[in-house]
Length: 248
Ligand SMILES: [Fe+2]
Ligand SMILES: [Fe+2]
Image 1 (cartoon, rainbow, N blue to C red):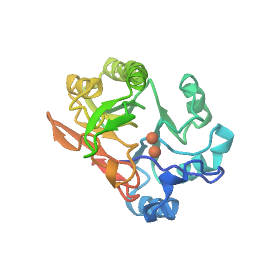
Image 2: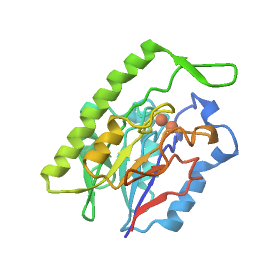
Image 3: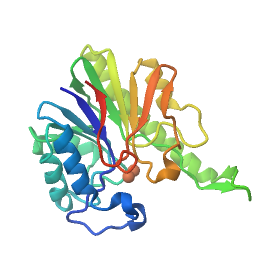
Image 4: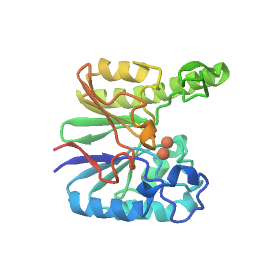
């Protein structure tokens, strides 16, 4: 029995691609097929797979049904986290999604799920991604203050949602945590954030995040061990479509 994870499948069985620039390059060629093959090879029915957001390009649920059906067809238990592209998923209607897909998919938002004696907590997260102003040599000299202020509000909202997830898990008696975010826990300028601090506060063992596509972004945030926590980027192209094992 194992816990696996990956993010950013960006499926588009029913929808036109809007941001083809994100999906160009050989790493995205037949990625649905490569991922399905990797899952068949790695995952058993007793395993759990957490998908860390950006599941579909569909804008509403009716445009995502085939994408979700593809996910349902993968082996094992499937837990989904919200990404910035998952506009089919209204946060306030998470319970409705959980009802609709009961026994097939589980939607992680303001709640938690369990794996052995671990609580799987998480939220989309947020981080300021610019615009940054660069010097001629490529050093960051400044950034858009208005955007930074807007980002701060979104970070606060996501932090509140993450707290709900932790509190529900603690109330149910859990003290071991794996924390999932869609956005990286810090941006390129930060060494820490409210997300790294809450992870440390609760003694989280692993922080798992996605969202960063393309080799130039694979080191935007923390990777590896920091203050006793293992941080992993699990965007699909970074993992070359093979889910990462989180726990045995
Ligand atoms: Fe993405
Ligand atoms: Fe994303």
